[in-house]
Length: 318
Image (cartoon, rainbow, N blue to C red; front, side, top):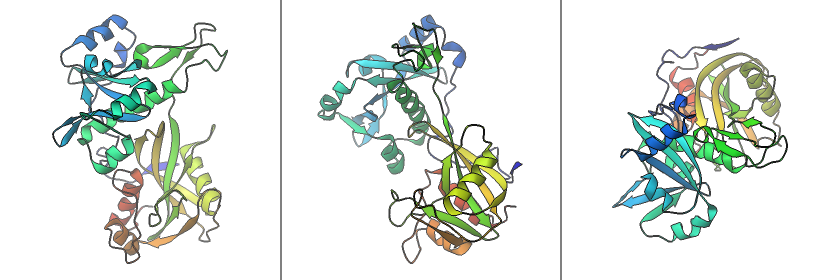
């Protein structure tokens, strides 16, 4: 059984892409006339994406990711427009430009094109923009890879404010998908296991993670992934929090897992290193004071907060 032992569950930690202030207003997606009226409001703004990069306007030293829809459409040929919702009645949209606009936009002195991960890492825009940017990036990315019906192969058409694609040939309806990923810290008393992926910076260690499989609960996915990656047997699973992760369309489900075994057996096809860490060493890593320069992921990632929660509660998780 999955349990939650975090006392402030109603107020999850602040990390990137979560905590959107936008009301998605899903009931309005099916009314094309209303969507058109919303787009004409003076307060309507959109986020612009081209070839997976966010387009932003330079305003002195600051960067502004919001454009009026007319301004956005003047930047290049629009491929899809997604209704993101309402921010205190101000409509918000995501707009995808054709890839042909990429190089001309890069050449402009008044614009800056940056990937979403870098924007979050460097705090390039205020944090309130990150959740709608993640929403726009994920849905626009889904459109880019689902232009044809997987059922019959015919070209599909965007409807419902960009939240569905319909096949005119076989009448199938296709919706954006979110891939669940469990990300967990296997713990035993005041120790836990961290691993390293080959793609990580050389000093960074993080939680284990993997996709949940069809027909599998969160608890089962957590225990299976820990067993497959490091050979440990786990029992109880404690839910921590979740984080949208638009790379491309995942939902990170953060957990702690009670490890019943101790010997680590690494699956080298998954990770390159894994070992036990005690609470004191983790504290140094979180504070960027480890004598060997070892670190945890930055605060924008849920992994950072899963580890920090373990340290702050002195390993008292189960």
